[in-house]
Length: 79
Image 1 (cartoon, one colour):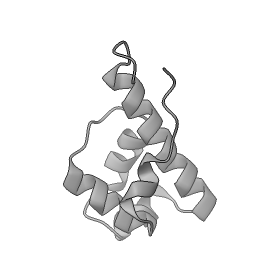
Image 2: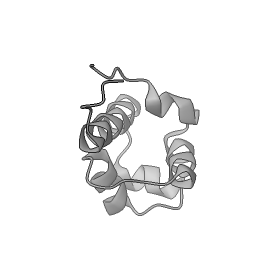
Image 3: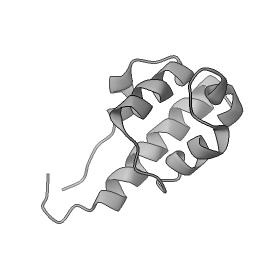
Image 4: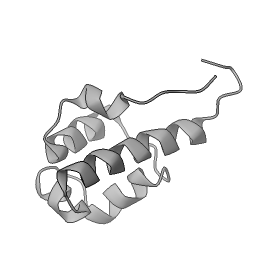
């Protein structure tokens, strides 16, 4: 990974991945929130790259999306 790569860029890619999965499954933020311990409005902020979350939140999000946590990191980082 390039040393010029910024945390904000990673957060945007991660959030974008959440939205891709969410749309594929036809889930709303509220639907995801029902399956995890994160508020729907917070999930929206995460998907927009506005919030840096913890590992336990990643696990919760994967539960809400009905996926394995590693699927949240299935994106390319351009160097």
